[in-house]
Image (cartoon, rainbow, N blue to C red; front, top):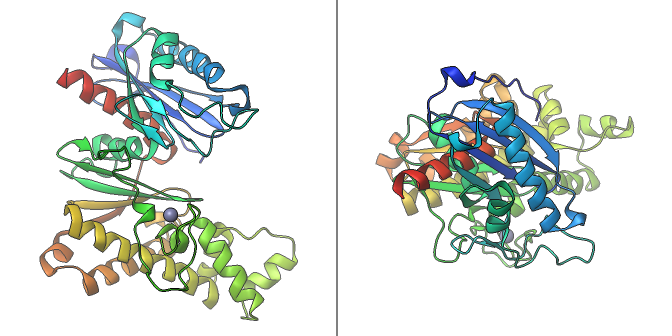
Amino acid sequence: MSQQRSFIPAEQAQAPFFVGIDLGGTNIKVGVVDDLGRPLSWLSVPTEPKKGPEDASARMGQAVLDAIAKAGLDLSAIARVGLGSPGTMDIPAGMLIEPVNLRGENGDEWNNFPIRDRVAHHCGLPTSFANDAAAAAYGEFWVGSGRELSSLVLFTLGTGIGCGIIIGGVSIDGENSHGAECGHIVVNDADDARLCGCGQPGHLEAYASATAVIKRTRELLDAGRSSSLVDRLNNGDKLTPKLIGAEAEAGDELSLEIIMEVARYMGVGTVNLMHTVDPSGVLFGGAMTFGRNATELGRQFLARIKQEIDRRAFTVLAERIVLDYASLGGDAGYIGAAGIARADHTSS
Ligand SMILES: [Zn+2]
C-alpha cells in the first residue's frame, strides 16, 4: 500500500525510543518510533526468504541499525526492538515453527528457527517477538483507529484473514501462540462448507478473504450470471477485489452482492468475537477494505456488518460496539511491534 509518511525530528521526539520490524514474505519494514508511537524513520528491505533465515536475520539486524542512524539517534537511545512475524510460531520461545509464507531453497530452513534471538544478536539490542497480526492490532490500539478504545479486535482482510486481539493492553497470544486465529473460526458447519486455505472446512477465511471473493466470483460467472465484470475480464482486466469493488460502485449487482456476502460473514465472525471477549471495538484493515470510510461502498460494507451484528448479538453489545476501519495501513505492523517492545520494556 502506498501512503504518505510523516516523521518527527529526533529533537522533538520523546525518549525512550523503540524499533519495530514487520517481517513479511516479500519485504521487511523497519522503523524507529518514540515513546508516543510517532515514527522518526522508516525503511524497507527485501525478505529474500530463499537465502534462509540466518541471512534474513542479519539483514534485519543491519536494517535496525540503519533505521536508528536514519532517525539521527545513537544505539544507546534505543530501549528495545520488537519483531512481528508471520506464524506459525512459539512466541515465548522466540521461535518460528512452520511459517508457510517463508520458504528457503530447500523448503524447511525457516522451520524451528530461533529468529528472535538471532535478530537480537545481529542488532545488539533486546528484542520482543510477536505475531504480525497481533503487532498490527497493537499498532492500531496504540496510535491508530483504536487509540480511544480500551480493547479491540482487528481483522485484516487480504489473501487470508489475519486477526489480533488486544485486551487489557496486551495481545491475546494464547497457550500455544494461536490465540487470535480468528480467520479460522467456524462460520459454516454444513457438509458442503467451503474449504479454507488451512485445509479445514467452514472457516471465516474460506468466505471472506480476497481469495474466497475471487473464487466465488468465478463460480458465479461460470454459472452464467450476468455482470459488467464479464466485459472487464474480456478486456484483459485481472479479477481482483479492487475490480469487483469498482464494478459494484458503478452499479453492477453481482459485484455488490458478492461484497455484501463478505460483509455478512464478517458480521457473523464479529459476533462470535463479541460473545467471546466483548471488546470495545472491532476494526477492519488490510487490502480488501473497499475504500474504507471514504467511499459509499466502504460505508455500505461496514453498515452490512453492523446489520448482521444487530441481528445476532446481545442487544447491549450491539448498541455499544464501535466498528471502524484501521488507519495505519502498512505501517501498523512495525509501529505495533515497537509498541509491544515498549510494553515489554515498561513491564520489565
Ligand atoms: Zn482455516
